[in-house]
Length: 587
Ligand SMILES: Cc1cc2nc3c(=O)[nH]c(=O)nc-3n(C[C@H](O)[C@H](O)[C@H](O)COP(=O)(O)OP(=O)(O)OC[C@H]3O[C@@H](n4cnc5c(N)ncnc54)[C@H](O)[C@@H]3O)c2cc1C
Ligand code: SF4
Image (cartoon, rainbow, N blue to C red; front, side, top):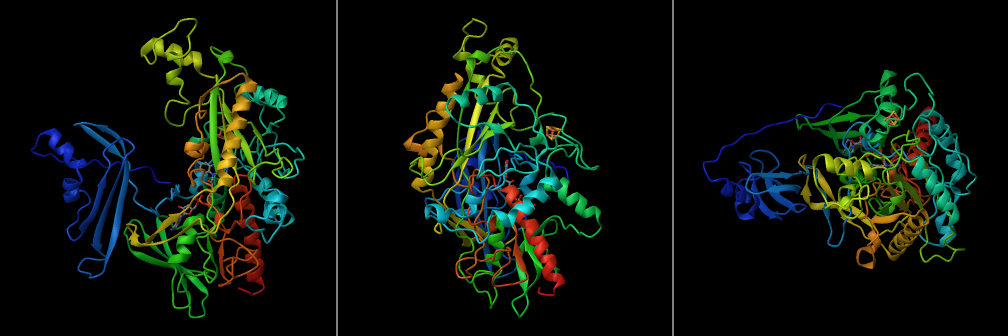
C-alpha cells in the first residue's frame, strides 16, 4: 500500500471571512464554483449545512473535451465539523452509489490490495449443515446447491493454511474446526461465562484467525498487543494482503496490477470471457488484460456491477444474467448492539488483560426457532467486547459522560472537566465496560437488490449501482429478541445499560441499516437452475463457462455467521475446480 498523500491548497479571497464561509454552504453560491469545470454544468446542488448533514452536487460533463455525449458525475460528502466562520471539515465520496426511495443500504468498500480483510474483525466461523438448507427447514428463501460435506474439506484446508484459534464444542450447527489454542478469557469474559450460565446462554471460546502459535516461517505468533484493527506488523492475524497475496507474488507466477478500476468483462463472438477492461486510476486511461479464465472477486455488489456493466449483443442485460437475477437477493447480516458498565469494577485492579485485538469468547446461536416457538425464522450469534479495550475512534462507550452520573472515589463531580481531575475519572471508569453485538441471518429476498443507475456514473465514467433494499418483520423481530437477550445478560452480570438500551419499535429496535454489518452477499447466487441463478455449484457462470465469481455474491444465504471464512473455503474449492477443468481442456 502506498502512504497517504496530503495536498494543501491555499486560496485567498478579498472578502470578509463570514462571506467566504457562507459561500461554501449556500447552494446558490456553492453551485457556481464547487466542482464546476470549464466544460461542465452543475445540474443539482443540495447542501444540508449541519454536522452529519450531506452535500450532493451533480455535474454534467462531456465524456471527453469537445465530445457531444455527456455524463453526470455526482460528488457527495458529509459535514464533520462546521466552525463558523473559520473552518468546515467534510468527507468526500469519490465513488458514489445511489438509493431508490426508502432504501438505506450502506455500502462499505475498501479499495486496496486485500480489500476489507485489512481491517476486518477476524471472526472466522464455518457455516453449519443447516445453513445450506434453510428452505427445507423453514420454507423461506432457497437451499444451496451444495451442502456442508462439500465445503468441509476446504474449511479444513483454510484452517491449516491461515490459522484460526478456537475449541471443538460439538455444536451441531457451529461446526468444529482445526483450531489453534484459544487465548485465556479476560475478567469481563470470565464474568460473562459465569453469569450467562445462570440464564442458559452458552459462552464459548471465540474463533478468530489470529496465530496463537507459529504455523510457518513468514508469520509470527501473536504477542497480544490488542491492535489488530491497526494492522499487524508481524502478520500474526489474517489479512489476505499479507497472508495470501504476498506469498502468491513471491512465487513469481502472479502479476499484480494496482490502481485498476475494472469496468467490464470482455467477451468474444462465442460469448466466452476473454479478459477485463479497466481504467488506470493514475492516468485515467482505459486498458485491457486478457486470460483464458476470468474470475471476479470484487465484493458481492461490485462484482454484480461489473457483470451488469458487461453488456454486448449476446448479453444485452449484462453477462451471466440471462436469469435476470444478477444484483437480486442482496442481503447483509442483521445487527443490533447494547452495552453497559459494571459498577463493581470501578477503580478496578488489573488481572490477566493480555489478549488479541478482538473477543476471546462468543455465543453461537443457541435456540431453535421452530421448537422454541420464536416469532422470527433465523438465528444470530453474540459478539462481546469490554474490559480495557482501546477505542478505534471516539472516546469509547460514553466513558466521558460517566463522571456526571457516578461518584468518583466517593466524590460527586460535574460531568466533563479537564486536566488531572478528568484523568482521574477516566482511570476510575476504564475497564468497567461490557458490550455485545448480535449478528444474525436475514432472509435473502429477490426484491432487495442493486441495479445500474441509468443516470449516474462515477469519476471513471462507469455507471454506478442504485440500491433497493429493505428489511422485513423477520429481521425486526430478531433485533427485538437480541435487545431483550442483551438486557437479560447485562442484568445477570449486575451491569447497568449505558447505550443501546432505549431502542424500540420506533427505530426497529436499533437494527442497523442493511449493509452496515459489511457482510454483503447474494447478488450472483449459485444454484442448479440457470433460470433463477447466475452461477452453478462451482461458482461458474451458467451462461459463460470460463467466467467465475468467488466473493459473497455467490451466496444463496448467509447463515448466522460472519461470511469471510466461507468465501475463502468456497473460492479455494472453485480454484481447484478451475485447475481441473483447465487440465481437461473443458474451459
Ligand atoms: C470493519 C470490518 C469488520 C469485519 N469483520 C468481519 C469479521 O469479523 N468476520 C468476517 O467474516 N467478516 C468480517 N468483515 C467482512 C469481510 O471483510 C468481508 O466479508 C470480506 O473482506 C469480503 O471479501 P471480498 O473479497 O468479497 O471483498 P473485499 O474484501 O471488499 O475485496 C474486494 C477487492 O476487490 C477490489 N475491487 C473492488 N472493485 C474493483 C474494481 N471495480 N476493479 C478492480 N478491483 C476492485 C477491492 O479493491 C478489493 O481489493 C468485516 C468487514 C469490515 C469492513
Ligand atoms: S494482537 Fe493482533 S496486531 Fe497485536 S500481535 Fe496479535 S495479531 Fe498482531
